[in-house]
Amino acid sequence: MSEVRRPATKVEPILDCRDVHKRFLQGPTHIDVLKGVDLRVSPGERIAVVGASGAGKSTLLHILGGLDAPDRGQVLVAGEDVATLSETRRCQLRNARLGFVYQFHHLLSEFSAVENVAMPLLIGGRQVREAEERASAILGQVGLEDRLRHRPSELSGGERQRVAVARALVMRPSCVLADEPTGNLDLQNAERVHELLDDLCRSHGTAVVLVTHNLELAEQMDRVFELREGTLVQRA
Image (cartoon, rainbow, N blue to C red):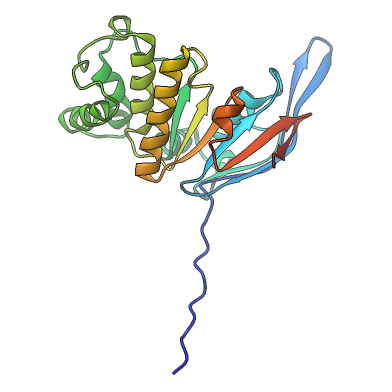
């Protein structure tokens, strides 16, 4: 009896960036930063984007995250065309599907670590108790179980960035967009934060798009792209 072969299940990308263009006005002239960028990010995939300062890496990340709009082209997040969504739905999609980590932590100074991490859950409609329980659990995973009630000013730089990583992952997003997440830290803290981000994303099956100047860090990812003269070129 011959074996029945089932067709392979098509895996839809969590992020699909198609022919994206972006230009900025600088004085009397226009600067074309992105010139037809294409990028597909599969679930659980780890991608690094490198390039010279001013090449447009952060601009690309903002467009992928729906924080900025392309002048031309299309960005789909979990199959939804971001440009066609209402602002309310776009915010919901970002909150549910995407996590963000920046070079500077962007924590809210008046709130404690656990309150900062719980914020995306509260925005998503969770009750305070449930939100803080989940926030506490993920802060424990990044080694901050004894710093839950400390405000950002009471934490070290490395601790603040670990809180930012916890906040990015607390909603269990499909993809984390990380813009130089260790660029403001010393080598030891940078390595620890990257390892935590990598370990947590692997354990949760979360994709990562990492913008970095650190080639050694970039080469640990599944694919590495260089943003060069407005286009993405995959490095061998």
